[in-house]
Length: 366
Image 1 (tube, rainbow, N blue to C red):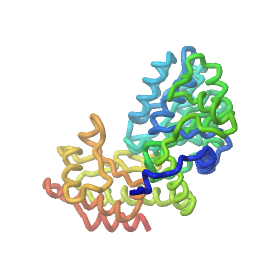
Image 2: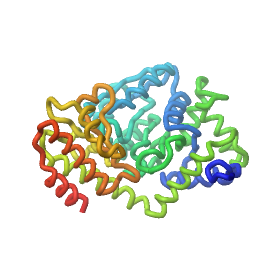
Image 3: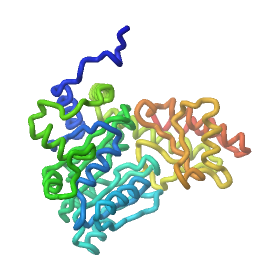
Image 4: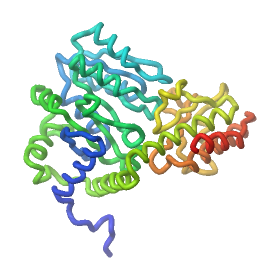
């Protein structure tokens, strides 16, 4: 018996290249785009290990857990790392980056997360990019959570390594990802004796065997189902229009924030300033005495498919995340999530205004 997901013809090099080209158009970039055959951690780590090493002085911005991970990779490569950490309920500023350069002019690498889905903040990459470009450092950006939810423009912002994944706002698979690479980044890799070669982490292998070879023969068998799913989610974004998709995510964030404030009961936005809140997901702080992980478990009892999660690690005590991205960036997903949280709070004896929350969310969406 044939099966549409199993009995597929091999994915051709031409089809693979066409998917890369569509991802490049989504990013509005003229840089080389390499689609990596794994979850976004693959190009995130590969890009750092390819461009950083002994002699690198890296400014690593920490606005959430991923920034901490990047600093660990950079140190493991032998780079000197200067961590710029800001409270997770806020965003970093371009002025803070400028001050870091003034204090350490030898900084030649900057790593930054655009939107931290784990903490719910988003950073002003366009403004930061101007500062980084003026200084001349290589600019590495994790745009995994932001792509599809807000503008991601590596060329306009001077981003040398821009990593994206399809599993959040793009509404696609988790098992495939991509990175746009500037000519400066390729040159840094070529001069880095520690850059991975003959390795799954190697970007230079893809450049030599695929990009520079004219994209005529794939270096290894691709993850076919994930590639086709990536193609399908890009097609869906193209059909709706990227601006429309981003507006839908922005509306979901605005509605969630408004509904949570109207709900009351001590539930409040974790990111204080709405302009610093990411449109891909909204994080909420639980009232004193209410454990976030328990509240989420209770909220999911009736409807386990709601896009709710407790924070990870120590944040599991106080943070709830409403993951309104991809197919969950809808009025119903927002309304149902707020209703479930409000119901769970009321079951713990907390007074809430469910009708007021739903009305506020609907009004904000409109």
